[in-house]
Each structure stands twice: as C-alpha cells, then as structure tokens.
Length: 359
Image 1 (cartoon, rainbow, N blue to C red):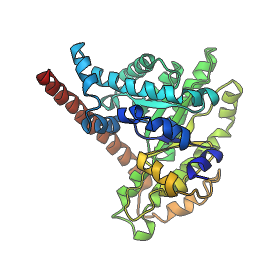
Image 2 (image 1 turned 90 degrees about the vertical axis):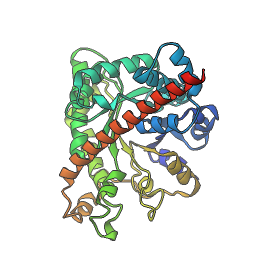
Image 3 (image 1 turned 60 degrees about the vertical axis):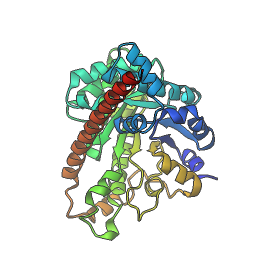
C-alpha cells in the first residue's frame, strides 16, 4: 500500500501545497485526488508568483481582464480565484463526504496587510464572498494585528487558515483567537461550526540553524518543535473550554504541518512527512514531496498525544533560543511573502504591458 494511502488511514489528511493552471487543465490534480489520496490544497503568494511568471498559461486570461479595465491586485485575485474555485469544485465530493472536515483550498490575503487588522478583516470577507464556494479558506497570518482579524473573521463565519505559525506559543495564540470567535458566535446564537486550520511551518527551523548545530542535530529542530506543538494541540482539544464549545456544536481547528519539503540535500526527501504522521492533523506538501511519498515513502510511528520525546530533543539544542528564533522566523516569513507579493505584482505589470503591446 502506498504511503499516501496509509496517512489517511492513520487519521492525517494529505493536502497539496501548490496550484497552477496547468495542474488543473491537464487533469493532474484530479489524478492526485483519485490516485494519491490528496484531499485539499494550499496556496500562497510565492506559489502564484512562480506559476504566473514561469508559464504562459495565464496570458489569455490576463489579456481578457486588461480589456475589462482590470489591473494589479484586482486582476491577480480574479486569476487566483479562477484557479482555486476550479480546485474547490474538484475537492467538493471530499468536502461533502467528510461533512466539511476536509476538501479545502486556501487563498491568502495580501501580505501587505499583515499589520492592518481592519483591512485584513474586510478583504477576508470579500475574498470568501467572491469565491462562492463553501470549501474555500482564507489565509491570515498570526501577527499581533492578525490575531484580532482571525477572531473577527471566524465570528463573521469565514473559514480561516491561520498561517506563519512557528511554535506552540504562536499556535496557542491562534487557537485562542479562533476560540474567541467561536464563543462569540455561541453567545450570539449563531452556528459555531466554522472550520479552521492552524499552519505550523517546519523546515525553516532547520534551515535557520543548519550552520549553528553539529551534524547529528541537522534536520531535527523542526520535528521537535512540531511534536511540542502537537502536545499543546492535543491538550487544548481535551480542555473544558473546548469541550463546552464542542457540546454547543463547534468543530476543532485542526493542526496543519506546512513547509514539509526537505531542504537538506543529504536528508530523505520525505523526512518531515515520515516524522510527522499524527492523528487529526493535515500535512500540506510540495508536489515533489507528494510524488516521492507515493514512489518510495514510508510512514513512521504516529506522534503520541504527549508529544513523545519532544522536550528531550529540544534540550539538545541548548545553545538555541527557540522562543526568540520563532519570532524571527515569523518576521522573516512575513517579509518573504511581501517580497514574493511585490515580485508577483511586478510580473502582472510586466506581462500586462507586454500583452498590451502585442495586441
């Protein structure tokens, strides 16, 4: 049995961290759903930047939107929603079959809004309304300004993928924002079953410390942090606060492993997938990692509810201030998405100018 089938049997959803128009047009995404047990999809500014910059697949659509007087961010979000709504339709049977637990696709608000609460709330609502699909999540980063936006969006009934999480502390802050939104819906007499995931980034930990730790500790920090976060997640799921919400009809915010492609050329290409098999979680992986998992991957033991040996593993990184590094990684992640966004807007602008000249 392929490892891509084993993971769902263990209770972990397998999502693809990629979207291109070619994946949709050629039927490859449909094949991944049918043959590799893929049950969802995530996107971000970097993914769309590469997709639009490195192909001509979007040129005709850009030309048509230019003729309609659209440009910049508005033009991009229409392109992105065209892709993501098609993907959402492919995943709709999964979504319906799982009663809304699975079958999701995600679209991120502009990274330029990471420190603008009011605008993030407005854009999250607008994008979700424009999608007109029940299985589209809006991604909001867990910045200090993003937390109240997450709460307000959940209260408004918008499914949210909380992104740019790097530690158990950041996860708990995101989970509390989600819960505040749910509790407010309960108090207001609204249905509290608003779906959400909390995305923990993994491989950036190991890239950050690769030149600061001995070889024996290479590619181990991200896994240890993930296991500690999984313990916090499972503890929260069994808390009286969550039980009260469940009893009122809420559904849990699932933990999602993100950035699970292996960056170290000396390490296994399915390192993080094998190490992070865990019930009631999602692993969203790059296309190459998905293919590797299907071809030659295997699955290790699932993470126990108490995080297993996470604290013992973290103790081996005595010279690393994990808390300070998590803050730095989040800040760097936010800045990298801004860079990708600016590059993306530049690509849209240059392609628009080229297509106008050619018409």
